[in-house]
Image (cartoon, each protein chain N blue to C red):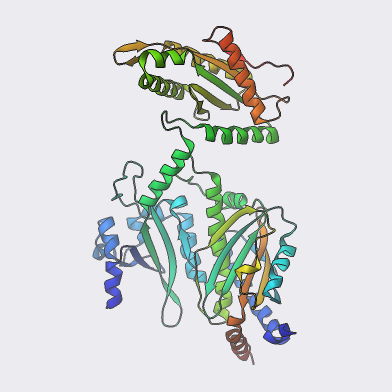
Length: 212
Length: 304
């Protein structure tokens, strides 16, 4: 019941529309930056209590054998956690696609470092594109922590509720993405909380005002 | 004013570029390490002075920062450095250039429009050297400098698994110095160590780049030959044998001559695990010992 209060249906609809526009722009700019087209699905918004997060997350990634995750915190007035989940084997596909021509210096450096770094680079850009464009439309400026990467793990415990304040409400913005070339796909989850809600309501109102 | 002082005092390289990637600021740290004064580089394209940056990843990152306002990170592990500066630490033999951890981020004007980007550069050479040493210690035998037993277990299991999954040939040669105990008893353990090193470096010099030489333990060695059938491995083993037989080691003015016995195994369908594979070669090696030493034996082909 509390879920209804945090954002009204109308607000969710506006947010959905804003995400649609901003992800459309991201996709266009992404093509320019990484030279390949990224298809971002119509974003989906769910509001839930933090303890429900792990189950929700597991439901979405269960068809993947293993996953790689790039996580980055962003903070402005709009703040939260971005989790980019790649399907298995994505790292290697991306290495080929981006044609990293330089092998790392030492012979003994294993390929998984390259894989890690590639996921980090692409993840960083993808998250930056989506969060950045969304913030821009809402007239906010965000900064980011360096991305963290988990490569090719079993998904079951990827998101535990202990990572977030259990009393908080999570606003989960989810989009599916896939690359035009190569077999790379996954999900982007933006998890934000109560803290951003007051600002977000105001930002949504201002956004709609310019069309009225 | 205060920030300008910090800009120059901080022990990190700071560079500001405009949208055309021309240098707008170049702090003291960058002046010191590049040897290029700010006045000289300001206003010029960064690629004029650092053509190595004219690569897809750097362009991609700058575009991304200007388009999305995010940060792009250049870790030492993958990139080693953005700016090729001479290393100032005492570890110059390992790295020709200073190892750097760098990031690029946006700088906005009063209307929140990204007009410039900054690059920061941290010197992480020392950490990189320590890491490299740790990795080396973990993989290599301290005395001989060839790969150690731990790495052998990992590597052979890995290669074995790869061949079983995707097909391909794989052979291993186990070999052992004949009468090594006598060398130790007659000439002392220092001489024994010297012989171990000589054998390692002699064999290292005749194997291919793709082969791996491990110290299995004591005076026993193992060589893994990827993409090599049993026949080829037998030939290689015989080259090892001849090379060691012809080798003359001079220790304290004594010329020491030694021989080795070798056992060779090639991967076939009957061998179900890396452990069995090693055991096969080991058994062949012991037959070579029993049959008089200084010879090559191949694994028994029945009932693996």
